[in-house]
Image 1: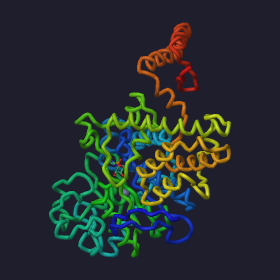
Image 2 (image 1 turned 180 degrees about the vertical axis):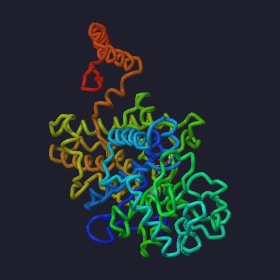
Image 3 (image 1 turned 180 degrees about the horizontal axis):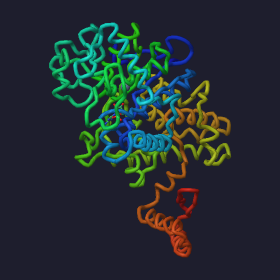
Image 4 (image 1 turned 90 degrees about the vertical axis):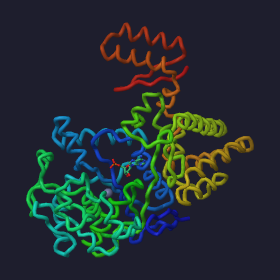
Length: 479
Ligand code: AMP
Ligand code: ZN
């Protein structure tokens, strides 16, 4: 059965298949690398990762491109404040992003192009748009997209030209008086921004003078270069990007290339924290590390972020995190019961059963798989899994029946990106006092104070916890 997915453009659920060739072209707006990504960003990236997994399990090859935004007001400001070059600053946060993605068991995209690495492509795109009458240079050396030259502008977010006249958001970053003055119309947006003192050394030569590309342009240029200028099948991003970012991507790309930019628009709703918008000033902005430090494993975080329907806002709470932890343990206990029937050990569950191979028949778990195919309904999928767990099927199964169910469960867990029996999950069960002791032992060992380290190890053992050391970390296991 093909994957069905809601499309923001047509406001309907449509079948998602590659429109030409075998491979589905999937582009996602990636992180702005000026700090650690927060759990809201990860909600969006995890949903995209889950879609890719479902498509691949369903037999569709996917070319997944997710860019790195390393050139905008925030990265420039951040690098200046840190006293680093833009390159070093963004490399630091790109690495951190990759570490978090790995911990969250996200698949690596096929390519991860960056804005800075695509300046010539962006300049070429602007030249094309000027040539075709869709863009114009202002006196200060900035270049703007002429919104009223593209009749279809606003079709994704269903904004009419006249409504746009009252919008001030469409300025690709901070609105400043000079921008307002130079633009023919307030809805026109910057493709090229002439050099400003606050840009520091981050300026590139262009036919219009030194400057840098406007933020919206990078995705049009990177999509064209990654997919050879062809129409892409699906484009993902958080719902906040629908206007103006995606609207502008459509305008730039369609005016330059003369054909549809994208067939299917995939937007995920935002994550809220305890009912409020996440923000630094409210002190409710969490990163993966914040939650790990509170004892929640990345698998528990992943579960929490993907468990709700992606088209509905997710209200993140600590109660919710605890509930996810119990839900994962319940799935683990279920897998253990099945494994006892096949006489296999839980340590081998992930490598034996969790992989990108869907069984021909999901058996009792068929409803769970159908839910994923039907608009990525992760909530219904998990509901169906717990329905099966609740019916206690293991009691009536022999080894081969248990193995078939384990294969179906493993495929679903692969689709959801969840791994069971991970060692960090075991550590995460340790109470805070035990974690602190274990950390003190690790610190002592790093400082080569082996007497203290050994004494804390004995202490932990007496309390029922074994410490396992790895090259750069430790894990706790209950005796
Ligand atoms: P940024 O790093 O700001 O460029 O955003 C990266 C991705 O995270 C984009 O697809 C955004 O739409 C998405 N995003 C930002 N905030 C949230 C949030 N609170 N919940 C879900 N997605 C978000
Ligand atoms: Zn984008």
